[in-house]
Image (cartoon, rainbow, N blue to C red; front, side, top):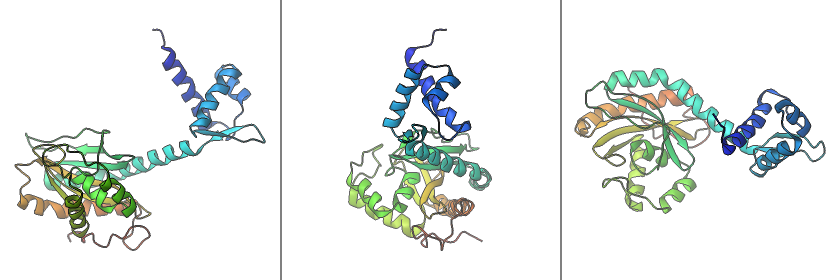
Length: 269
């Protein structure tokens, strides 16, 4: 099979980056070229591209390269999401047993949020979500509870931007959404009826990290026909409890630094 030029180039770039994971902290052009069997000219071009994007940086005195801030940011993001998913398994399973509906875990990502895990409902008619796909924060309970607890400057920035309609139930009016977010902060959880996906209902609560900032959300979702006000009322305490437990596992403390979270209701006994 013939390797496409673009694929070969991408592979070389990745190979260069991977050398920084198990080699010396600072690498030179000649050393990289020897390790990968590439010419110095090719290695130099790759490194210049990576420098331009902040993936590596050049020490002007030693003329050696080290990992840059962009790589650090990517690694931190991957670690945060991995930690969130890794600690969530038992809590999600418990919430699934309590509700018998689809349980999801969402992470805050640049430009919105993404589902990173789910346990599908035991009902014959059920809802599933697409893992890894980015969704806006203003549509659906998982996004709204993230938006409600974001730092105010970031929240206002999102509210001032275009609030596109994913369904005919999506809240697209800034003031209406602002009122909804205030209610979510008071309640400690969000609910939705067909706002992100038509005919789907959901309840979600925010998950906080060690620094007190919102990191993600946990939700229960399913057909709107089953998400009656009575079911939402009965389900919400379990969702809040699950989110509280995940936050605690991530090191969050109600009296710790970061955004105030005193409005979160206490979990049921």
